[in-house]
Length: 197
Image (tube, rainbow, N blue to C red):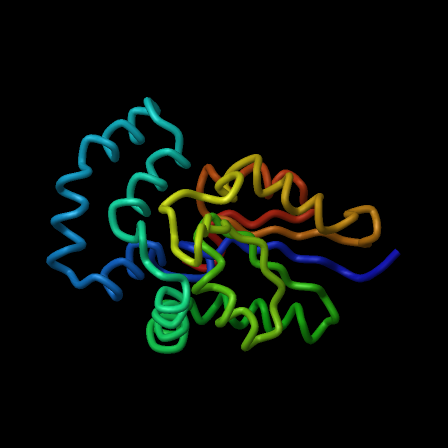
Protein backbone atom coordinates (compact mmCIF):
# COMPACT_ATOMS: atom_id res chain seq x y z
CA UNK A 1 0.00 0.00 0.00
CA UNK A 2 1.16 3.52 -0.83
CA UNK A 3 0.04 7.05 -0.07
CA UNK A 4 -2.99 9.09 -1.05
CA UNK A 5 -3.71 9.84 -4.70
CA UNK A 6 -5.90 12.77 -5.72
CA UNK A 7 -7.47 13.27 -9.15
CA UNK A 8 -8.43 16.78 -10.23
CA UNK A 9 -10.49 17.88 -13.19
CA UNK A 10 -8.92 20.99 -14.71
CA UNK A 11 -11.45 23.22 -16.53
CA UNK A 12 -13.91 24.73 -14.08
CA UNK A 13 -12.43 22.91 -11.09
CA UNK A 14 -8.86 24.20 -10.92
CA UNK A 15 -9.60 27.03 -13.36
CA UNK A 16 -12.38 29.61 -13.48
CA UNK A 17 -12.98 29.17 -17.23
CA UNK A 18 -12.88 26.54 -19.97
CA UNK A 19 -9.30 26.65 -21.22
CA UNK A 20 -10.16 25.37 -24.71
CA UNK A 21 -12.32 28.44 -25.30
CA UNK A 22 -9.73 30.74 -23.76
CA UNK A 23 -6.97 29.15 -25.84
CA UNK A 24 -8.90 29.71 -29.07
CA UNK A 25 -9.40 33.38 -28.14
CA UNK A 26 -5.70 33.68 -27.28
CA UNK A 27 -4.44 32.02 -30.45
CA UNK A 28 -7.00 33.21 -33.00
CA UNK A 29 -8.33 36.49 -31.61
CA UNK A 30 -11.82 37.34 -30.45
CA UNK A 31 -13.24 38.12 -33.91
CA UNK A 32 -12.27 34.74 -35.35
CA UNK A 33 -13.37 33.05 -32.12
CA UNK A 34 -16.90 34.47 -32.22
CA UNK A 35 -17.20 34.01 -35.99
CA UNK A 36 -16.13 30.38 -35.74
CA UNK A 37 -18.58 29.58 -32.96
CA UNK A 38 -21.41 31.40 -34.77
CA UNK A 39 -20.81 29.37 -37.93
CA UNK A 40 -20.59 26.15 -35.91
CA UNK A 41 -23.63 26.99 -33.82
CA UNK A 42 -25.75 24.06 -35.08
CA UNK A 43 -23.12 21.60 -33.81
CA UNK A 44 -23.12 23.19 -30.38
CA UNK A 45 -26.92 23.10 -30.24
CA UNK A 46 -26.83 19.44 -31.28
CA UNK A 47 -24.38 18.79 -28.43
CA UNK A 48 -26.69 20.44 -25.90
CA UNK A 49 -29.56 18.31 -27.21
CA UNK A 50 -27.33 15.21 -26.98
CA UNK A 51 -27.71 14.59 -30.72
CA UNK A 52 -23.94 14.44 -31.19
CA UNK A 53 -21.22 13.28 -28.81
CA UNK A 54 -18.92 15.55 -26.84
CA UNK A 55 -16.04 14.19 -28.93
CA UNK A 56 -17.74 14.87 -32.27
CA UNK A 57 -18.54 18.46 -31.32
CA UNK A 58 -15.04 19.05 -29.98
CA UNK A 59 -13.44 17.63 -33.13
CA UNK A 60 -15.63 19.92 -35.23
CA UNK A 61 -14.31 22.96 -33.34
CA UNK A 62 -10.70 21.74 -33.35
CA UNK A 63 -10.88 21.05 -37.07
CA UNK A 64 -12.37 24.47 -37.79
CA UNK A 65 -9.69 26.37 -35.90
CA UNK A 66 -6.56 24.20 -36.02
CA UNK A 67 -6.60 21.68 -38.86
CA UNK A 68 -3.31 21.90 -40.78
CA UNK A 69 -1.51 23.84 -38.04
CA UNK A 70 2.09 22.75 -37.75
CA UNK A 71 2.72 21.11 -34.39
CA UNK A 72 5.86 23.14 -33.46
CA UNK A 73 4.02 26.43 -34.01
CA UNK A 74 0.94 25.13 -32.16
CA UNK A 75 3.02 23.96 -29.20
CA UNK A 76 4.85 27.27 -29.02
CA UNK A 77 1.48 29.04 -28.74
CA UNK A 78 0.39 26.51 -26.11
CA UNK A 79 3.54 27.20 -24.09
CA UNK A 80 2.88 30.95 -24.18
CA UNK A 81 -0.74 30.39 -23.16
CA UNK A 82 0.38 28.21 -20.27
CA UNK A 83 2.82 30.86 -19.07
CA UNK A 84 0.74 34.00 -19.68
CA UNK A 85 -2.93 33.04 -19.33
CA UNK A 86 -3.38 29.88 -17.27
CA UNK A 87 -1.95 31.45 -14.07
CA UNK A 88 -4.66 34.14 -14.30
CA UNK A 89 -7.39 31.47 -14.47
CA UNK A 90 -6.32 29.34 -11.50
CA UNK A 91 -8.62 29.27 -8.48
CA UNK A 92 -6.51 30.16 -5.41
CA UNK A 93 -8.40 27.65 -3.23
CA UNK A 94 -7.67 24.87 -5.73
CA UNK A 95 -3.98 25.70 -5.79
CA UNK A 96 -3.89 25.79 -2.00
CA UNK A 97 -5.57 22.35 -1.84
CA UNK A 98 -3.04 20.93 -4.30
CA UNK A 99 -0.15 22.35 -2.27
CA UNK A 100 -1.61 20.94 0.97
CA UNK A 101 -2.04 17.48 -0.54
CA UNK A 102 1.49 17.45 -1.91
CA UNK A 103 2.92 18.56 1.45
CA UNK A 104 1.18 15.52 2.96
CA UNK A 105 2.86 13.26 0.40
CA UNK A 106 -0.12 12.71 -1.89
CA UNK A 107 0.25 12.11 -5.61
CA UNK A 108 -1.75 14.77 -7.47
CA UNK A 109 -3.02 14.04 -10.97
CA UNK A 110 -4.90 16.35 -13.32
CA UNK A 111 -7.39 14.45 -15.49
CA UNK A 112 -8.72 16.69 -18.24
CA UNK A 113 -10.77 16.59 -21.42
CA UNK A 114 -8.78 19.57 -22.70
CA UNK A 115 -5.70 18.86 -24.81
CA UNK A 116 -2.52 18.09 -22.92
CA UNK A 117 -0.57 20.60 -25.04
CA UNK A 118 -1.28 23.65 -22.88
CA UNK A 119 -1.98 21.96 -19.54
CA UNK A 120 1.28 20.00 -19.43
CA UNK A 121 3.64 23.01 -19.29
CA UNK A 122 1.71 24.40 -16.32
CA UNK A 123 1.41 21.01 -14.60
CA UNK A 124 5.10 20.30 -15.15
CA UNK A 125 6.01 23.60 -13.49
CA UNK A 126 4.35 22.31 -10.30
CA UNK A 127 5.42 18.66 -10.73
CA UNK A 128 1.78 17.57 -11.08
CA UNK A 129 1.04 14.46 -13.11
CA UNK A 130 -1.32 14.71 -16.08
CA UNK A 131 -3.80 12.62 -18.02
CA UNK A 132 -5.50 14.58 -20.81
CA UNK A 133 -6.91 14.47 -24.31
CA UNK A 134 -4.29 13.92 -27.00
CA UNK A 135 -4.60 15.56 -30.39
CA UNK A 136 -4.01 13.60 -33.58
CA UNK A 137 -0.95 14.66 -35.57
CA UNK A 138 -0.10 13.57 -39.12
CA UNK A 139 3.02 14.72 -40.98
CA UNK A 140 3.82 17.07 -38.08
CA UNK A 141 0.47 18.88 -38.45
CA UNK A 142 -2.77 18.78 -36.48
CA UNK A 143 -5.63 16.98 -38.21
CA UNK A 144 -8.32 18.52 -36.00
CA UNK A 145 -9.20 15.10 -34.66
CA UNK A 146 -8.60 13.57 -31.25
CA UNK A 147 -6.16 10.69 -30.91
CA UNK A 148 -8.32 7.77 -29.73
CA UNK A 149 -10.95 9.08 -27.29
CA UNK A 150 -11.76 12.40 -25.66
CA UNK A 151 -10.74 12.21 -21.98
CA UNK A 152 -14.27 12.85 -20.74
CA UNK A 153 -16.78 10.92 -18.65
CA UNK A 154 -16.08 7.18 -18.52
CA UNK A 155 -12.90 7.72 -20.53
CA UNK A 156 -11.41 9.51 -17.53
CA UNK A 157 -11.84 6.32 -15.50
CA UNK A 158 -10.43 4.17 -18.31
CA UNK A 159 -7.35 6.37 -18.64
CA UNK A 160 -6.79 6.54 -14.87
CA UNK A 161 -6.93 2.76 -14.48
CA UNK A 162 -4.55 2.29 -17.42
CA UNK A 163 -1.91 4.33 -15.61
CA UNK A 164 -2.54 3.70 -11.90
CA UNK A 165 -3.32 0.53 -9.96
CA UNK A 166 -5.75 2.05 -7.51
CA UNK A 167 -5.47 -0.81 -5.03
CA UNK A 168 -1.93 0.42 -4.35
CA UNK A 169 -3.27 3.54 -2.60
CA UNK A 170 -4.59 3.86 0.94
CA UNK A 171 -6.92 6.71 0.01
CA UNK A 172 -8.32 8.11 -3.25
CA UNK A 173 -9.85 11.56 -3.54
CA UNK A 174 -11.29 13.27 -6.59
CA UNK A 175 -12.37 16.80 -7.48
CA UNK A 176 -14.71 17.80 -10.30
CA UNK A 177 -17.38 20.24 -11.39
CA UNK A 178 -19.46 18.69 -14.19
CA UNK A 179 -21.36 15.60 -15.29
CA UNK A 180 -18.28 14.59 -17.27
CA UNK A 181 -16.42 14.20 -13.96
CA UNK A 182 -18.97 12.02 -12.17
CA UNK A 183 -17.48 8.66 -13.20
CA UNK A 184 -14.10 9.81 -11.88
CA UNK A 185 -15.68 11.07 -8.65
CA UNK A 186 -17.25 7.64 -8.14
CA UNK A 187 -13.75 6.10 -8.03
CA UNK A 188 -12.90 7.99 -4.88
CA UNK A 189 -13.49 7.37 -1.19
CA UNK A 190 -13.69 11.14 -0.83
CA UNK A 191 -15.25 13.10 -3.70
CA UNK A 192 -15.61 16.87 -3.98
CA UNK A 193 -18.07 18.45 -6.43
CA UNK A 194 -17.52 22.15 -7.21
CA UNK A 195 -15.40 22.47 -4.05
CA UNK A 196 -13.62 25.74 -4.79
CA UNK A 197 -16.52 28.01 -5.82
